[in-house]
Image (cartoon, rainbow, N blue to C red; front, top):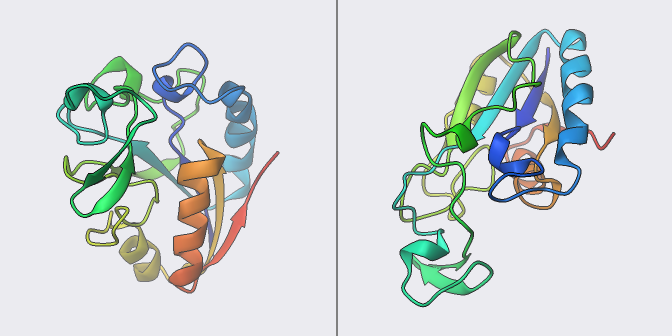
Length: 171
């Protein structure tokens, strides 16, 4: 069996959101269409507490784009985004979530960010996704979502390290 993993199709990553990916909304129709071709559809949400260490607003004198050392690793600072239980953290309204079997949250530890759908940035804590896939004997995953240069990229790299066959869907 193969799985489609839809990464972070959340309001804050869409045009008009707190941390918009240019043309990020254009991936939604394809993500919706692809779901019918997969027996298993999973999704992730960036799910930060308001005191998350990756937020520039939580560091006096810092601004988005600055870099700091957070819990021993370099961290780029971001604007406030995808704060748990806020409209910005919700899935995009046009994103069809009816076929999603499970949603995995990432970025929940305030001391470390998590770009990958599998681990935090230091690989200290897992999201549960790898175990979920292993339990179902899934080796082939297809990734689509936002942002390609961060969360999708690091998810594909971690999937490869875990011995999974990762395919990134661009369009």
